[in-house]
Image (cartoon, rainbow, N blue to C red; front, side):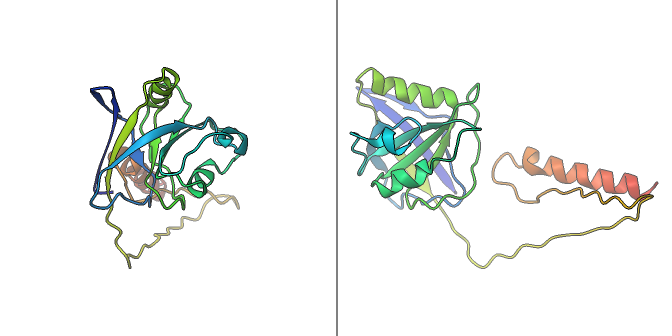
Length: 192
């Protein structure tokens, strides 16, 4: 993602959806900004879609870690959603980047508080509309590498210390801090 914006429009008011973050390898919106009606489908099970027309609309799905995988995002895509929002029911309003999903539509994560706010607009019959813009630049042909080091120990035990070197956003924490920790551990144990 190069840039993105998601705002909700209710009556004459506009609100930015602060935690909206594209899934890794999400489709973009192209040159156009999407202006879509929002539909809530709960956990996104087949039963949750009964009686809900989502074709050409933005779909809001709430999910929780630990629940069975329902393939809700794929289901929304197959039923014709034009954009998909996955709100994670964890305390607060965290922003996070999720791993690839093959939906074919702009697909975003949301923090819990933003997800609840959007659901409340629907519950109060306020007919929210989402304006969505997502500029994506896919760079083909990139290569990656792995760096391995080995330090013989005092036992037969094997201990792996790993960190990834890519960063999607807030890369100082994810995962430059992990790389720095890994290097510090390697330096420490190399000197023992």
